[in-house]
Length: 451
Image 1 (cartoon, one colour):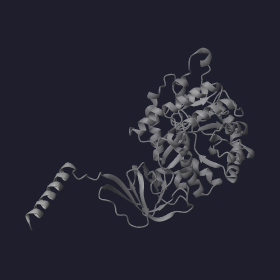
Image 2 (cartoon, rainbow, N blue to C red):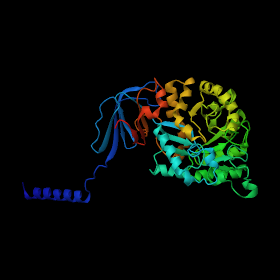
Image 3 (cartoon, helix red, strand yellow):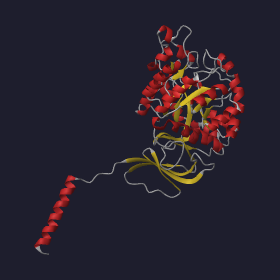
Image 4 (cartoon, rainbow, N blue to C red):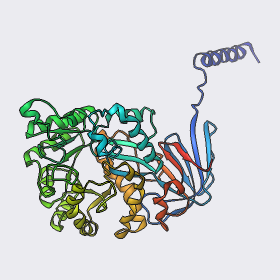
């Protein structure tokens, strides 16, 4: 070898050494993974289970679903869960909760000493229990929630993902007018009510006040807006049959929400209230149990969602006035559900528990009445995939970007391992303490009885 070649080799070695010293080899970041082996998968959309699958979760996403063995990269710190033929389903979604109002009794709410700080622990405890019932996502349909949601997202409390609406927006004497008899109008007497000061509601009359109320909620991070468009059963001043908000007021709310890329949902039962909301551009009707066929057809025509419940006539702690006001709503729901299904209305489901904390333990059992009109697969699809599609209406205002409600590659890893096949026995869903063996939200395991 001549001297020139030796010089070139030496120079090349020097350059390589210099390059490695200036740009050292990057270490591959460690990732967390969970491998579910031998599971049957309900993917959120199919009528039958996908059998004998292995599912790999990496960080907070579903990475691989296959019938074959999975080779896990060395940089993944792996937890393996043997499904042993059990069923893996998406996390459940409740599209109508009130995390604050559902955690407290009416007596607690009426206590003049009440502060949100004094009840924060109770709200956190109830939200944690909700997660352990398999509800990995919820849409909060009104109330003071922004600070708690921020704490959940910061990892301070284990709880579902939260789509917050913020304070409900109501006209004077509307369903969100929570004033005590001694509290007078803010407009005439200058003092906001206790409920308004707590962030429970905005009493807003006229286009300008409605615009301000909507924008205030958006300022604090609302993912959608909750407007009261008709009478209710849990409020003191308004009969169930009344229509609330003029077209112009409701249209103002819709315009403000649309400017932020999101939507308005309205509390409404009657055809008159629902039609006005649809004409104003509202995208989601909450409740609707007194609706008629013509109005349901109008919903289909305008691509409007029906987010509703199967309500019970009474519960042990229900106020007698509320029980009486609920009667026409209960009578109407038996007609609403089959009509909505047969006409092809987009349907979402939620519970809407208020002021009865003991009722929260029955959250899962409130899914089962859907079986009167839907197959088990259709029912499970509503409370996973379909509810997730409604959450997605928030667009870029959604606090969690990514696909939910499905077990698919690339989707967010919100998963439940069920001890059995819910498509054959939906009663399994009603007893999560016994039958939900693993509960995962955002790739993190919050319950694992197989460990």
